[in-house]
Length: 507
Picture 1 (spheres, helix red, strand yellow):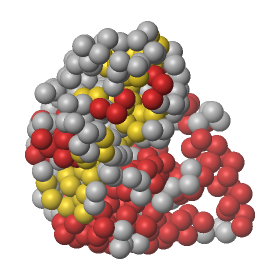
Picture 2: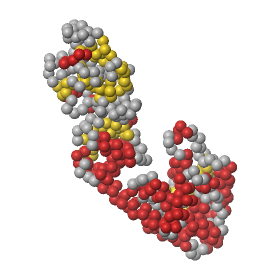
Picture 3: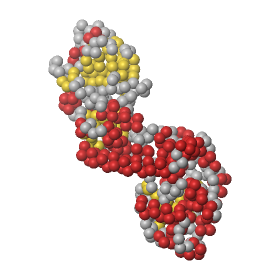
Picture 4: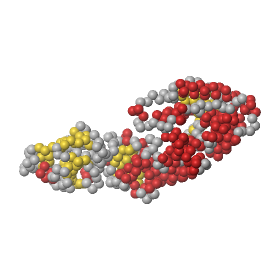
């Protein structure tokens, strides 16, 4: 809910006469101006929205940009996001920011953001992470409504150092260790990223500017706070210039990360093509000629592109795709990070899991590997996770020879004495073959059989195969094997049923 709003104003309309008469900038403002030029954060004549929480960094940011406003011809507006997480403290912060902007003559928009989220809806994320996302969403919304060129936020060199150390502790790669970027497309900029918090506080004292302290910043239960209060002071004893060192490291890794991303884009353009429904098809053999570092990045990029989830995926998710799909057997498939990934000979297909009916990981409910086969004792019932169907097997009496197993039905009957009762259920694998019932002992590859009945490729990977050590007994819901059918000499039968699902097409 937006409490106040005003049109943006040019510097001369809100700045005090003393500020307008000032011919030179403070040392900190000069450094910010230099950073803006070299990093191309903002340009003369632009309209800037400044995020002001009331803390020291944001108050300094607003004051510094006001210093630069005359010579840079900047139009400024402030925005304050009130989450209401700290009760009366949050309300006091909002009033403080309103008074500050009123004294400086800078229009303010105050947005209230509701974070009434239950723990179940957090889905493993912290409340701070949810609040951050809501804050950026609100700022973006205000910025677009006002038609600003950029939105300035107050991250400092200390924030950069804390972020790098935090990602180091989590074992991040170059993307994480690149830290906080100076700009975040399309609107957000961070003009104070090369200014230390000590310099910020010194600047505020010289300007006699008050600020608010967020009580949550001192709570040791947050990792960032513990890094700020406990770990960084220790690192400074080893190297007093640790902030500069970590800032330099972030810059180096950011450029290297950008270089690697450009290489990945180049290889993806050469090794992939787009199929139907946004599916991306990757040339597996070509990708395997690249270093593992680029392979991981290609997998990460394809997962993001097809799932639409730009955060992540985790290192573990990428490693799983490489190990179980890229280096796995043809026909292997899984769902990870909102994308369905499947290997088909020398092609690896990526698509949104929402576009794949019944898409699931190749793990059963108890963690069994579906590709290796789910053990099916006799009698027993299991759920086939790739379709959600239930498979049941049991022993029966002799089956009359005048009523052989029906093709295309969800029930199949076999001579129990012609097979070993070490049954498994697994998906189709390249090279699989059987002797289709009704074809008088003719051997046929499953790939050819599927092509004959025009079964779509995606469906082939999900069909359950009932397999004994002697061979494939049944292509679930489609066709049984001639070798195991009951005869006049049959004394025991094995009955298999496919339940609670729509049967597949048969002949």
